[in-house]
Image (cartoon, rainbow, N blue to C red):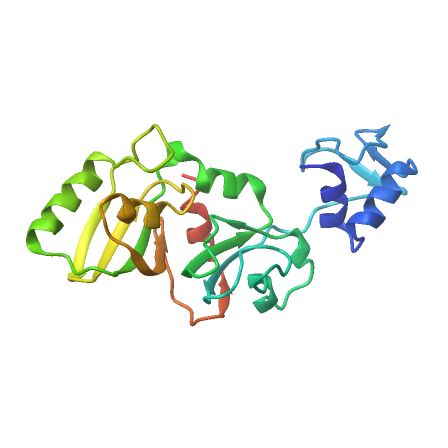
Length: 233
């Protein structure tokens, strides 16, 4: 963790205030004054600000139900930030683990624990994400068999050399399917269906790993300890 982030997470100081204190030589790490705010520190280090030993607040882990027309960003852009729905202090310290497009709805996980989110999104972990997809073209029985096979084998996305990892297709109706993937490539679900000659009309993420969405649109809740630990195994 960066030193300025550690100071912010241990005090009520803003980022600019924390950087100022560090640059003025008011912060020491293991008895040595550090004036570079980008210095990497660990929670076990003895970090002192003006004679007071700092201890970080507990990390925050949140499930949110992303509405359409919002962006997974800390600030408003063309669309409003999803974080406008969070009534919390220190929202600026949070980030989203696995973003969704502005028009995509459903489950997002929010945290201030960088190691946890890295572990969640690490390709080697093969964390499963389940999406409900509405398609523009109805699927015949023959097309379902063909697409199911191609997704299991991996498809070639436009502009990429490597095939996608195996994905699981489950048909609900001829125009509504469930798709489980273990990657997070740019616009991956939309590009996968484009690669087999179809178009995604709406996209909704229902599950990440063992965590299923269970709050209403625009609502959020803290994850349980078991849910948090499920990504640390």
